[in-house]
Image 1 (cartoon, chains in turn purple, red, cyan, yellow):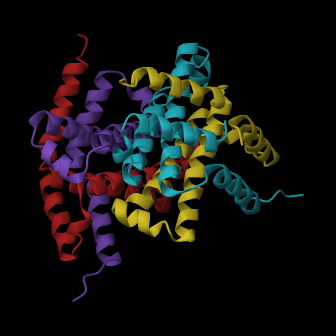
Image 2 (cartoon, rainbow over the protein chains, first blue to last red):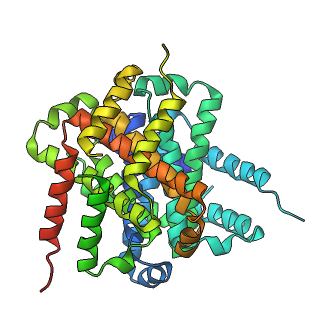
Image 3 (cartoon, rainbow over the protein chains, first blue to last red):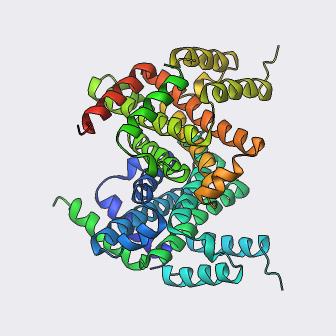
Length: 105
Length: 105
Length: 105
Length: 105
């Protein structure tokens, strides 16, 4: 799914539920950060080795996947409110990173 | 761009620079959270009205777009390390949200 | 309570429960960020006016107080691991802020 | 320094600079999270062993101490706006933790 499609889907979901009034830039930025905190919780006490072991449990994997998805969902809604084209933004950021960290040849 | 393509692009970028050894689950989760903090900085002191006004400045808009992109980039790299299919994860999370918050008809 | 006393109390609490091995710098930094996310959750959807109204409910106030305390507790444990004297660090940071933002007279 | 004294000092600092109008609950919560992100940056790419090594550099140690102090400063200002007594909140949270995780004797 492109961000454009994801954005349309999420905005339709939200509007059907009358949540638009809550979706201010600050609220959505805070929401993305809240979900980031819930994602971090999965990395709190385990070592990297233990994480790579415990992710073999499908329930654990799904729980982490859900949290990553939640952050992405709120970021997409935030981009929508700010008129940011995320497909383009991600593309351009990778290009900038390529200039910032050029390959040594 | 689908997450699958984004993932491939980012992994190739990283491998070409020899950064793989730094990309452990914990490091990538922390990195995503660091970028989230930089994103939040844009919403720190302005009201929602002021944010929607200041976003009219293309430089400001690009700066915020870059930060959102940075969070997405690290989340995609984290999903890669954990073997999570982000296209599917986001799709499934939206379905779950639909069941959690059904439309009252 | 000074940070020095708080630190001693928290370290004794932890050692009595055999948690020392989990208290690495990265784990404690992540833990502080997890609690910050839980704190932010209280500010996610309400306006500032609504927050100041809902805080009149003692249960709500206690819930927020608990989250702030949790962040402080993990920061104190992190400072302990790094050999940072928090009483001095806070004092010195305020002095630096005073130099950075001098009073216009 | 007790939180009570810290609070008084920070509020006086702020009022002398006319910053009161910016210090709404949401803005202060976001600010604390921004500083948390800056703190996390120090734990992004190094292992725990490398962190404990690099902290021997006084400049590095001071930089991390400053970030922890910044988070504490914003949390204290947030508690002030919400009428939360942080000395008591931290004390009570430790008591609650003691009940939640009793010592096995």
